[in-house]
Length: 183
Image 1 (cartoon, one colour):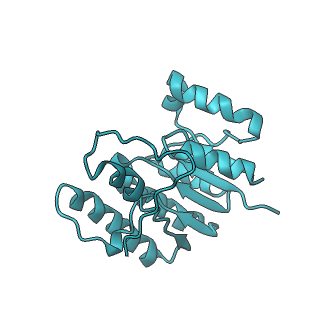
Image 2 (cartoon, helix red, strand yellow; image 1 turned 90 degrees about the horizontal axis):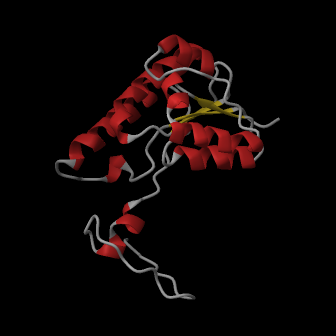
């Protein structure tokens, strides 16, 4: 039987793709949905678009409501956090709820960029990465089974424009690919 997956942040920029991939892979897929999300027309449309794929949206709750979070987590085997960077610290709430629920086989935290344990950055990025390091240590201290996904977003985001955020770069010509070796 496929693991039941809960995605927190499933209507966001990255989360909606994770939801689609989970459902397409045959996992019973749940998304924690705040009441305010349903009243947002853009987010509501994302929810409606997932209904035909079998995504189960029945888990209403909030990352800042401990009891609703525990209740949702008790229904699943795997928790994936895809929350935005402004809520990274709130993952401590997810960790506490996972610990209380006691049934989670794997936790994927919202960290779909760089491996924060291998970076040496300066401000303003350093404070964001410090939060991610703090969250990693909290997961490890609680003994929660986890996986860190570091997709090294900078390769595709910064390199094509030579580290000029906001600049645009033309795609490579058809039939040609750009490969970066940063080792």
